[in-house]
Image 1 (tube, one colour):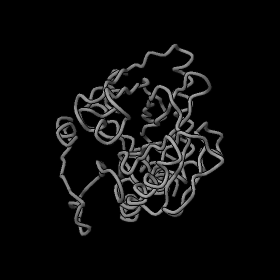
Image 2: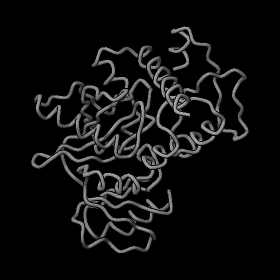
Image 3: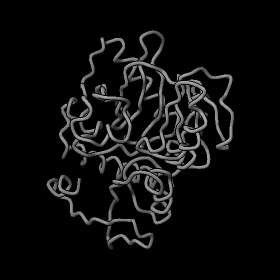
Length: 280
C-alpha cells in the first residue's frame, strides 16, 4: 500500500504502532490504516487519531467498535432487519449448549478477527471442548446456527457495492489457514449468480454496512443457502489488502486497479474530514 501511494505521488511515512508510544511525523495530512485485530480494528486507534484531529482511512471510532464486536453487530443487524443466522451469547466456558438453536453451530469469540478461535460444533458431545477453545480467545463467545451454502463477500467503496466475490476453500472451512495460505482457496469474481441475486447480495451487503455504522469502505461476508434468503455473517471495516485479499479482487473486477483503490481510500478520508470540519 505504501508503494502504491508513493506511485501516486504521496509522501508516505510508515509507522508501526506495535509500540503504544508511537508518534506521527510532523505535518501528517492523513493516516492510511493497515491494521487488523484489537487496537487496529476495534476503535481504539481511531479514537486516538480523532482526538488528535488527524484524518484516517475507513470507519470511525464507534462504527469500528460495533463492527469488531460480533455481538454488538448482531444486535445492530436485528434492529435494522438485516438477515443473519440465529444466535446466542455465551458468557462462561461452562455454559450449556443453547436448546433454542439447531445443530450444527459455530462458535466465535466476540472480539477477534481473521477467524481466530472459530470452532464448529456438529453434535452436542463436541460442545464443551469447542466452547472452551473459543473462550481461550476472549471473555464472550457468539454461538450461531451454521448455515450451509455458498460463501460470498460484498466489498463497499464509498457507498457503492463492488462485484460479488465467491470464496471456495479447496479443503474444509474458510479458516485462518485457508484465508492466509496462497493457493488454499479459490476465488470467483464476479461470482456466478444471476443479475437478480447479485443485486440482492449487494443490497444486503450495503444494508449491513450501514447497520453497524461503517464508513468509506469495508466488506460484508454472507452465506447463500440453497433455499432461503442470503444471510449476513459480519462486516469487516479494515479488509485485508494482500495479494490473496478479497477487497482488491472485487475492486479489480470493477475496473479499479490497486494503486487507484489505495488513492480513493485516502480521498474518502480527506473528504470526510473536510465535511466534518465544515459542520463545526
